[in-house]
Image (cartoon, rainbow, N blue to C red; front, top):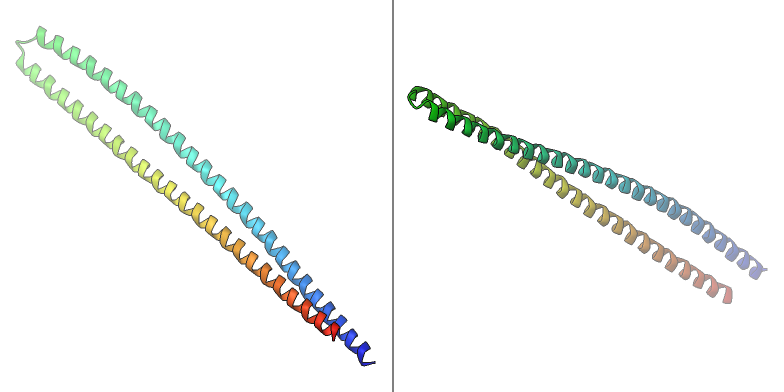
Length: 180
């Protein structure tokens, strides 16, 4: 009779352990699904960041192209201006006042264009520094994501290992009890 009761208790213990293991399995499965959702979310976020970076690069290329066109226009403008002033000075050397006025106008144009080109250059450098900062933030985000993913993976592996060890110990105990 006692042997029958002890077998029933062992069966109940095994059923209880089986139930707890099923719960743990369900919890682990849900956690794994959540981790997979997190990974998908982070991948999508990385894709969005990459698209943003590509847009910024295209914007930078357009600005570089505009700067090159502006530089060409500026050079052609200066060349035409120089020719104009040379012919004008040769024709009208008598009019020194006009020559002075033309020289002053030329200097004003150069300085205004230089100021404009300096401003464009500063603006470009600011945008480049912003791009570098964005790239740095993207790289830092990537590192954080990789670290979080590896930490979760290690925790999950450790948890599974501990659960296996507990299950083996319980199994050994139940075998010892069954042998007794």
